Length: 379
Image 1 (cartoon, rainbow, N blue to C red):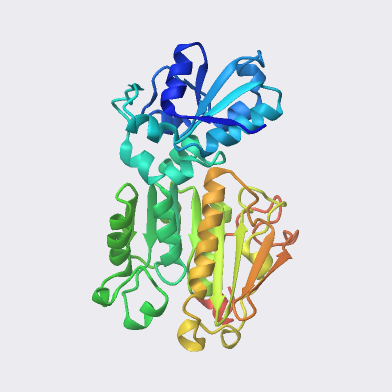
Image 2: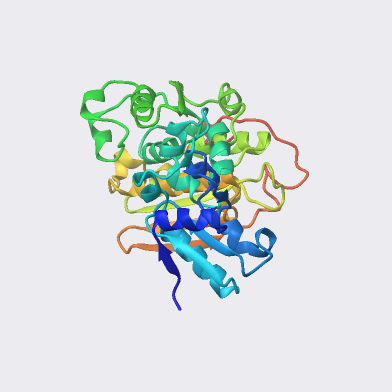
């Protein structure tokens, strides 16, 4: 026997005769207004332990959500668990409002922009209101507003990260536009961080963008890392990558690494600063930089325009997972992507017990001349 669907007016009538009307939407949805007299219990909570809320399985329950889908699913679950009298409201709260039935008024201090903008995140139990507030309080440092930084910055801002500090001393060139989607033709000659701030603020004015038009050096790297939760490496050269890695290990910041070359890319999370002897650092992957001729940059070797987009979005995904404490980050794993074959390959990356930087119990050796180190001139 299928679940009975009833109209809002029928639900209202049953409610007046003693049935319990249950709004199974999430907290943030109910805060915007709900059917008068309804009891608010999120679907996941209700399905997890219905006996806690309704010990009597013969109680008459009428479930309502926004449009009728979730309440029907919840009703089917309750029926399977032995509840004999369960119905779902066809059209949900939307139809209840359209038919002019009584509502509880929304809280006067509800932030409608917040609830509308992040509604799809708020529906995810893994994020919800608590997770979205966590993102709003988060601070992320992005090194580079170029090929990797462009897609990552767009998605982090759209996701609601509260503060993005973007460091890049470069200006927009026409050759950037094939892959660096933060910038447009009218931005040519403008500092990349200024162009980035304009685009990201237009996308989400709730995100504070801190534009830092500086090259990352040993003199300023710790200032850039101050008060941030996660660092995203969008650098395009080895000296900055080694410097950034060393600073993150010293200061205990997780580093989301990404790199592209022609048609291939790779992503990982280096978190040795917080997990000594358990998680690797960048030097565990590359104890020494490759010779310059073996790793030319994009201006020398070229790059498929969409490739940084794929890798940058993967980096943004890892940043969000770290901030939200959900899923399994790429710590100790190197994800390789080949765009020509459309294949991903994962390589396990254990920490190097003899790493000169992150080995357990090893004191920070100090910053070095990274340009000389990467040119083969020594450290």
